[in-house]
Length: 319
Image 1 (cartoon, one colour):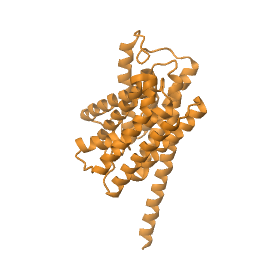
Image 2 (cartoon, rainbow, N blue to C red):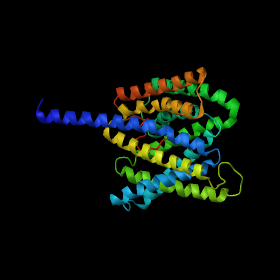
Image 3 (cartoon, one colour):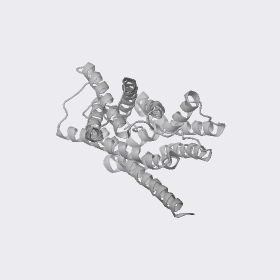
Image 4 (cartoon, one colour):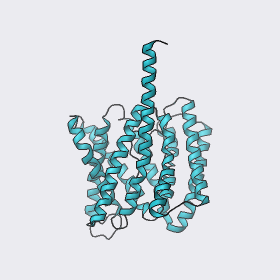
């Protein structure tokens, strides 16, 4: 092997390792978004928490977008596309944050992680990706794992237990839309537009929800602690989001995708430390089944060298 080939190989290996480190950090930080959201939702409606997340996220991205001088590098067609992305991600965020008022963080995140399974099915339908019976079977097994978690939660909180699936469905659609933009748009600009459009949509919802008494749409004036929680949601979301984007730019999705499932573990640890919540044996069984089916789907995709349908590299995971 020539020196130039050896150098390229070492450089590629370093890039992959950087991607793994960045994704590990993103996975570690992501549950903090949910912890702050659950703390905030005791006094602040979920649409307002979502709006705060988008506002802080857009503000964090704005100086970088201005410095890179690409704020105006977008067409009306792209703006319309970003508006749809903003609406979808807003529905996802509000659904998930509302869930946190009634469910444990780890349970909600575990149910949400049927998202790669939903994405696999949607990709076969709309993107015409070839999905064999083995992956369809893994999808069915993964949904069975979700049912093990949903069933006791459904008995406790009712239809709210289904909201993480609504959130996962929205993120799956969002991820498919992002594939059209991922290779030709700047990740900082994508994050900025997502935050901007999400904030505008939340502002409209909160305007019409004012005075309704809804714990989802009726805005309130948070106290100082509430402001800190909202700031924590936005800052941790911005950091986790951009770490994830650059992780996928440094390493293949097939390498990084399994790391996302360890978010369930880190979320369980954080929720136990902050709220004292810890899944029981049945829920751990459901979590294990979801993770196992997800790993199998990723392994099958990697084996056949297809672009993983579970690639959410340009998306921001539901909070």
